[in-house]
Amino acid sequence: MRDPYSLLGVKRNAEPDEIKAAWRAKAKTVHPDQNQDDPSATSRFAEIGQAYEVLKDPERRKRYDKAAEMHQTIMQQRNAAREAAERAKVAKANAEKVMEELAKANAQNAKAQAQPQAQARGQSQAQAQAQNQSGPAGETPEDMIERIFGAAAAEQAKSHPTGSPQANGDSADAAKAEASGGEKPPLPALAIDLIASIVRRFRGTTPAPEKAPDISVEATVTVEDLLKLNTITLKMADDREVRLALEKGMTEGHVARLKGQGLKLTGMKSGDLLASIKIARDSRFRVEGFDLHTTLSISLEDAVLGGDASVETPDGNRNISIPAWSGSDQTVRLNGLGLHDDAGGRGELVVELRVVLWEKPNEKVTDLMRHMRHGLYV
Image 1: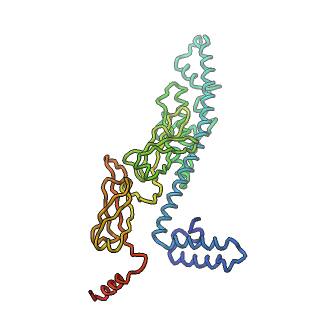
Image 2: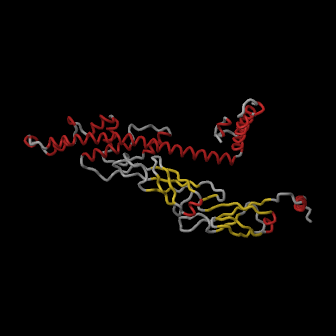
Image 3: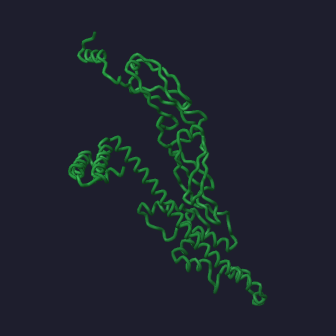
């Protein structure tokens, strides 16, 4: 179903009366009786009815809003990662261009230094070093950066000559800031870091390789995956496949860090992959932390008198005892049948009792309830 707010033409903060009025107006407009020549009128009328069913119920509306917000966040993260990868690709190409030009300049200067005339002119060691750090016609690495990237990039590179934490910023974070209305920096921090690294290599002061940005993804798993501690495969944007071994202590919202599986850039240490666990919907169990919840329907007589019942668990069916006078607000807890927790054990299986009546009315029960309502006990 499409966005119910868009279908009804209301804002996301619309009041219930406004939503009801919008539904009535839309339903009247697209009603099949009013659009007999439109073969799609029936489906459009049903779609509007479904949208109203979602928005008129506070709980269903809340769940939809939460799911829509999560979907939007995921899409923003994916777009941010994609934009960061594109900027990194451009920065890498430009940085390689700088490296190529600096290498040519270094070769020319080395050749010039080999000539005996340099010693005859009494050139000092400091002058030779200065010459070795300049390009064609005395061009320094900073001048070359300015010529290729612009003055703003040269200023940023000068501000971070040693790969400081500011220069090592996460491109994905920069993309998020831009998506949320933040100003776009003159040059991505990743590009500055690459340029500063090249300058250091040219001067012979190369430190340990800098780390490329991390990547955040969502890892959808099943309850069975977590119970069996399976290994799942994550499909990356660059067509790589990364395997994630599920471990004890993982549940909804847990973030697993896979070292070196993030963004990969030449000359830099690979970033990490941050996989956020998302548990797929299960027809049997609902996950809350490390506990599993399931629903068990019981008859009216078992609710009043108590009894035994069979319930499905992750480890097979189990018989449980239902205490006398158990209402639909009560639960039965089975220890050690939930997900693997971070303490070496397992959570609980919480059986939520639901009292149901018989399929057909029972005259004796109906008569008893009538007497109890009016205070006439038999």
